[in-house]
Image (cartoon, rainbow, N blue to C red):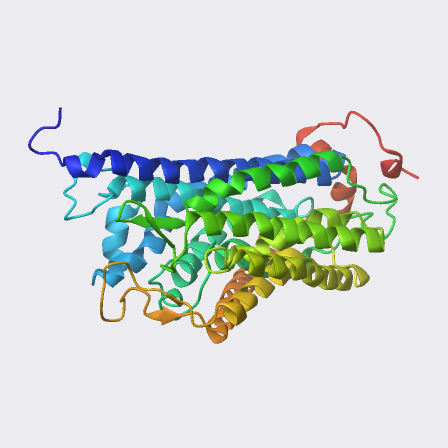
Length: 453
């Protein structure tokens, strides 16, 4: 029984339904991590699979814990600032030991903080994506960056991506309130690590056997493309619940608006998500069969999804399909350019920097003038509901800020690593395999391409 000191309005059945929505999105985010690990295991050299997987998991939990520590309070500060509070107030409430982070919802007056359970669950939800940023970054540096350097990077990247999410994702942050539109967080989840990859890849160089033979690695081969494909479909199956969690729900009953406060509906957002994958997969298949390169069968659907993610809430389904058809072509141009110049990076720059930027630009072209921003229920002032409009200029500004923060962060870290602990695993250790070098693990088979000549 609730006593007089407790607030039943915080724990109603309606609140519980919304709690389930965001909890389901959190589960979906965790399964995205599973899919990413399957892709990594299927695409890494057999001699590096265990080490690469462990580094991704540790990097994920560094990001996860750091976000609980301080990252969420940085992102949530946009709503406190909207209500004339400060970042200091947000940190007091939402750092790991904060008042709201540790309060029971039924003990908090709705007049002080309504819907507290939802916000608490949202910490877990966004912490998963803070960890995913590190997992994605590791794809670009796997097998060649020192673990110590990567783990330090994971902590710093979480703090910086949290600042970027405050700027670019939500409805009342500095860029989002005045017109930058990003439904899924393409800027801080995808473009930011892609910007970091641009710097790190140039510093780390290519892996042995990737573009030219090495005495111990005559060529670089992916050991299990079946696992890569399984991981791809795992991500496809997991993201619908994440999409649902990027919506806010208001009375009457379950009126849906996107995180940017753009008018939308659950059905439109879901159908756009599906068609983004379909359009990318079909154009990827055309490219793969035309070029006889299997990689486009895998890059295609991901390119369609990444390009569509920023606009799932504002596109019409037929528009989404057409945008997704164009995404693999952007990825193709960038990927071929990189391969000709022996740039050893196969995911973040063509997919995230390329298709992600293309998608943000298309939102600015197709959905220009769409009202969004502010906060539901506010009728006037700087944070009035839907006072801002999508514009191409603001989309370009968001791209520049997202990539720029990644580039600057990685440049500063590289500068420090090169003068202190170092950041690159030696060619000899890379060729020998990090499973053996660090853990004494021998592969169960000795591929012909990895035998000493």
